[in-house]
Image (tube, rainbow, N blue to C red; front, side):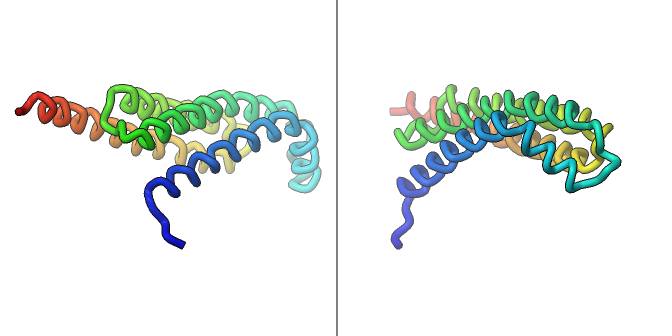
Length: 150
């Protein structure tokens, strides 16, 4: 199979739609999914279902925003609009979504320790996206200078 930029962008956008549907299914089915998980996991987690549900629904907000912004970013890239102010804003918002997820997981780590690992991962991704956003800001300035050069 010949893999190119357009196929990659389409595949990524399909994945984003898949994860958006998965997010909705997870939000709708969360009470049943977590009940099953807690029964299998440990009797020590008995009575913790409300905490897991709060974490799940709180996480749905930054995840939903992130999926929406990633789709917008990919739409702009597919239209060959890469180093534009809107993409920089999208990357900044993605960075903040990851940071918000890290905070939610950090707080949730008080009742379920493995969430602390997700906290570290989410905050790290937020930092990486922040760096990429700063690169986009510089590239945007260079592009503006080049556009004014004759």
